[in-house]
Image (cartoon, rainbow, N blue to C red; front, side):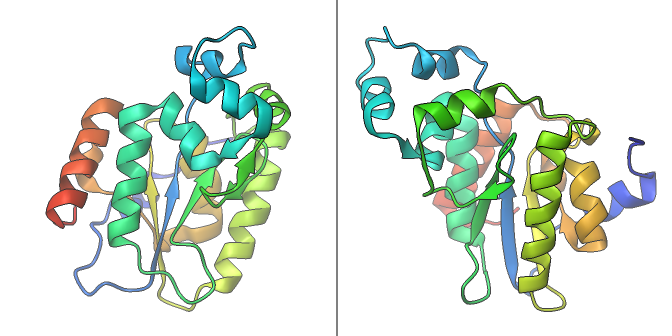
Length: 200
């Protein structure tokens, strides 16, 4: 799939309006193949959280925050402070590899995470793309005209932004301050902004 045009990327990079329109955040997923993700999947792990998760599951936001500690925690904290969703719509939704968009409080089991970890984040992968597109369209139908969708994630490749731009177009925004920063830097920035109530 072709990457978005420069014009599309420019629209996605527009700063969030100071007028605080209705706004929902989409949070890019944590990588379960990373070291901390493998700790959760390892049945011999000595971590208390891994044992609890393997026995009874855990909220997706907690899982992703464990795997991608600073970055995902920053995204959750930032969305909690600055989201402005319409009634009945979650303030933030986490992107997943195979389950589309899920509220961070959604309980995920070990079997769920094992299944999700086997699906690559690739716009050409139907197991990733189709649920994401379906849920993005469902979200778009719930949002009044003029609502904004803010992606808290990378646009360095098309893996997140290509399918989202297809659905949301010019209503998809991305903080300009993310450009040129790595994940850890973005996470720290969002935590500081949430604590100080200073919006990007």
